[in-house]
Image (cartoon, rainbow, N blue to C red; front, side, top):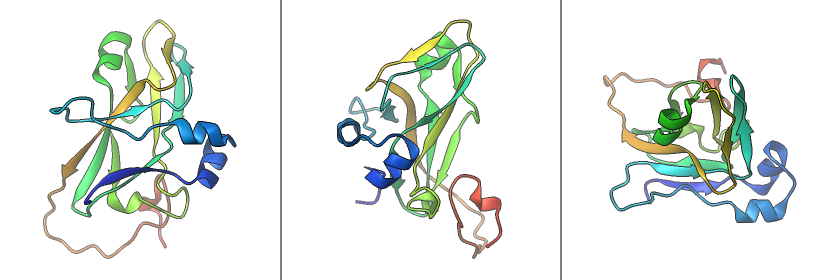
Length: 159
């Protein structure tokens, strides 16, 4: 397979989320909901709520493996922005192929959501809160020999 999602290890799950093997075994990998769906829905591991004006960092428990000439782009589910005015803090999450199994966090993807609406937004365990779309990446053909040295924000760090 050229691309796939997998769970982070239970050790990483304990560090980032909770020491609960049952919760670890229960949550699902992202999946498309219909035959023509573009995005893979990320589902909430546990219930969460975001108050108006609040920002919350949501763990996915997921890492993704894909080709070097691809990217995974994370977006808020359309209905959340349209109905509730909830959005990603960075508008679009950009995941590079070398984020997978990085030394800092195994490639665990997080989603930071902000509630810009006027009501509490609630997402129940198992409900979708973000979607990921794989896309081919076109470059100018330049050679870059630097490598990722860690997790989030590490492409701006020096070895």
